[in-house]
Image (tube, rainbow, N blue to C red; front, side, top):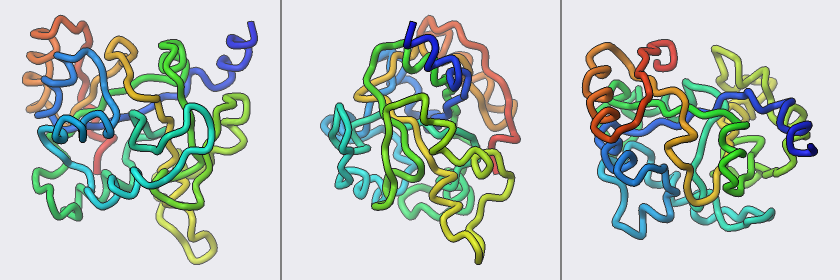
Length: 219
């Protein structure tokens, strides 16, 4: 009963994870998304689209709540599409990645669906690579600590009066170690050109999810 009362308030909040199309076959074969720490122990992901220096920073930050560890020990989800990281990618700002944003695929779940898997989780009030970011586990506090105004904003750049907007826009929901693919309810792509290859991969893996074009989720 306590679970139902707490989750109902924020349970329908969507959570967004993007990955390169080339990583999708491995995710589907394993039937789950796994944390960066796990992937690094295997030699890394097939196609790394993230900034390697930022990902390295996420391995040094400590989460001071159970189940502890560092952000890299968790599968990360943003609370909105069009994240600051995606913006950097779209502008060619990741030195080790040059494919752009069009091959990136969104895998979307919700707070309720993520929690219902039974995997431990934490969430943050901002970018988990930042030293000032704090983590939480109490879902009843989520509406108070996540800045939903900046999460929903079309323009989230820092301003003269508020130099912390970008960090807060990158608030995350982190699922410890792995999230079953069964918790994903939406798959979205950049354009119609990417619908067929993603649909083919899903069908081949026996995953019954439709693929939708959500151009507005990209830059």
